[in-house]
Image (cartoon, rainbow, N blue to C red; front, side, top):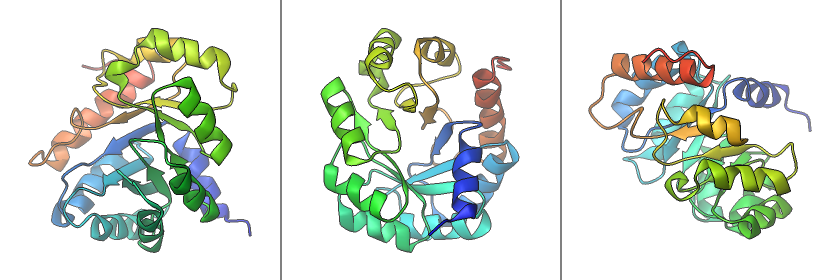
Amino acid sequence: MARPAFDRARDEAMTLPLIAILRGIQPNEVLDVGQALADAGWHMIEVPLNSPHPLVSISALTAAHPHLLIGAGTVLNPDQVREVHKAGGKLVVSPNFNGDVVRAAVDLGMVCLPGVLTASEAFAALDAGATGLKLFPAEMIPPAAVKALRAVLPAAVQLLPVGGIDVTSMATYLAAGANGFGIGSALYKPGRSADEVKRIALDFKAAFEGTIRA
C-alpha cells in the first residue's frame, strides 16, 4: 500500500541528508530540541535506544513532527525494530549489520541504515534490503576509503559516515562520495540547550551546503 506521507518525508530528508543523533536525551527535553532541529531545516532525527526512555521520546517526536523522518539508533534486534515501529518511528539505524534487523525494518516499510565498515558488509547489507549505509565508525573510514567504496558500490546507494564528523571534515568526505552524515555529540549532548542545538544545527547545514558559518 502506498504511503504518500512517508514517501514525502523520505524524499525531503534527502534534500539535507543529516541525521541528528540525540544520544542521552530525556523525554522532557526532546520536544524543544526536536523543534530546534526542525526550525534549522533538519529532516532526520535519531534517538538511540540506549537513551533514557527512548520510545517515549520517539513517540512524542513523531506526533509533533509527522513530516520528519524520525526513529531509533543502536537498534540491535528485530524485536527492537518492531517496538520502534509501534512507537511511530520510520527510521532504523544500527551500529552494525544484522540481516534480521534489516529485513524486519524493510518488512515494516521503514528506512534502514545499518552500520558497515567493509565492502563485504556493505554488499551484504544491500542484498538484505538496506535503504542506505551508515559508514561507522567514520574515524576508521577516512575519505580515501569512502572513495574506494563509492567506486564499487551502486551509484544510487546513500553513504553516510558517522562518528567524529564536524563542520571542518564534511567537505572532504563529500568530495570523496559521501551523501550525508550522522551527527552526534558535536550537535547534541545531555545538558545542551535547544537554542544551542539550533545554532550548531545551522552551522552543520551551512557546512553541508558549502557555506560554513563557523
